[in-house]
Image 1 (cartoon, rainbow, N blue to C red):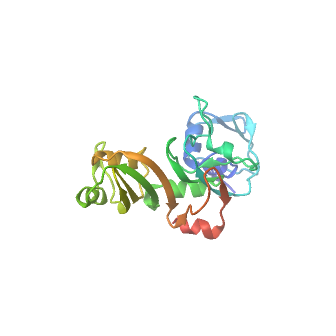
Image 2: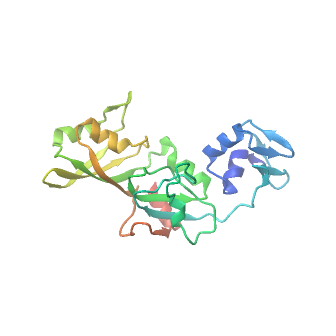
Image 3: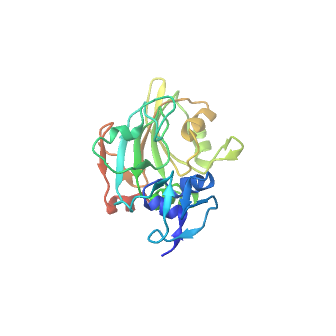
Length: 235
C-alpha cells in the first residue's frame, strides 16, 4: 500500500512527520536509486527501496511512549554542538530510537514526552489540537489579580497576541509567588516571556502536566512507560 514518504520515515522511527519533510527537502532520502526532494509523494515500503542517509530504513518499530521528569541542565535535542547533556542519555535501558515531543528549555524541568510515534507527535504539536500544558512557575514579586488577568485574556508578545491562559496562585511568600499556568501554545520560552511582560521574572519553571496526564511524584531524571489509557489523557 502506498503512503506518504513522511509517514514512512516516521513509522520507521527516523523522526516526526514534520521533521521528515525537512529531511526530504534536504535530499537525504533516496527511493529506488533516485533522490527525492518533493514532499507528499507516496510509495510502498514493501516494494520500493527507501534509503535515509544512504542506509535502508528499519522495519516499523514497536511504538513506545515515555513520560520523563526532565531535570534542569539537559537539552531536548538528540545532539548538541555545545556538548551539553541530552535528555535521551537518561533513558539507560531503551534500545529504540525515540525523540522528544516538542521541547523543554535547558533551564526548565518537568514533564517531557518521548516516543517513536511520529503521528502522535504531530497530533500533540499541531496547533489545531490545542493540547494543554500546565506549568508551575515561581516568579519574582507578587503579581496582583489585574496583572494575571492580562495573561488570562492574552497579551501582545513579539507582535502576536497570546491565546487565553488559565492561572492560579498556589502560594505567596516574601518576595516570590508560585503560580500555576495552563497554555496550549508552544512558542519558545513562552511562559517566561509572558510573566516578564507583566514585570515578574520567572525564577524556576516546571511542566507538571500534558492535558490530564500528570507528572505526579515521578522523581527528576526518572521516567515511566505510558499506556493507551495514559495517552488518551493528553487530549
